[in-house]
Image 1 (cartoon, helix red, strand yellow):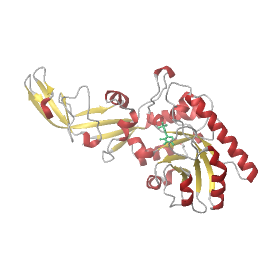
Image 2 (image 1 turned 30 degrees about the horizontal axis):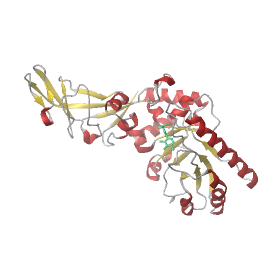
Image 3 (image 1 turned 180 degrees about the vertical axis):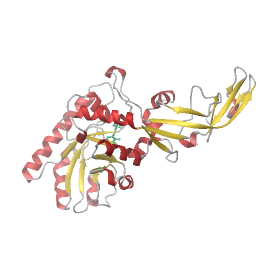
Length: 329
Ligand SMILES: *Cc1c(COP(=O)(O)O)cnc(C)c1O
């Protein structure tokens, strides 16, 4: 059967690198949304805890519940506000009416990405509404739109973020409230910068061993954590000129042994443009030259991403949760 290995040594290596950049593992919140970018939510949560990580970020309450036992703080990016557990991100003013007493709220502020979050000039009234509903402002966050691009946009957005923090500090002083936790950086921001003034960063792709920044930012010593293996279903000897798979587009240049492996696009394996593959990816299989019992189909997700005109995130996150994940030392 096909399977995925999760390399614990590489995972810890990436966590170590990021913790060092940030100054401490306490300043690193691991982003485990979408089945930990396809790596397996519970397995990655368990390993993160073993390393000493205390904060995680997920998409919804269902994900948060699955990993509750592993973290002190779990931040839910897109909550339904039905639970008092977890730290819930407020993405708009409209969501204020959903907030219940004693919930822990992280206010997301739109500093230029214009995707989610309240506007800077709404901070004061949003703080007031949250206090009125008996909930607590535990955090204030933003998200940068261009951290992985070669431009000065990040610096422009950081200026807006500075303004947000000053406003919040001012509000808290006047209302005699404790300061919330500030967080803004994603992986690219952490890798690019040398100093941090926030309480923690939210890192996803880098903990799994990837980044999508231009080469001019230099090399970062990240190591891919996941490998995908397929197991042989069958082999056959074929003559030169034989055509393999749908449409017969895989044409043999000489007499060869061809084998089929149990990974296809139903497993989330992108359909296009694989070197070494013979013909098209089928729903449940791929064909290759040779007759090894198993083959490694993903070693570096970024190579496959490039060939498919997409990013590493996209290749990883699509891997079907039913493929068994095995932790390897
Ligand atoms: C997904 C996400 C992150 C992590 O981004 P990476 O580029 O994978 O590090 C951080 N913050 C928010 C709000 C996110 O949605």
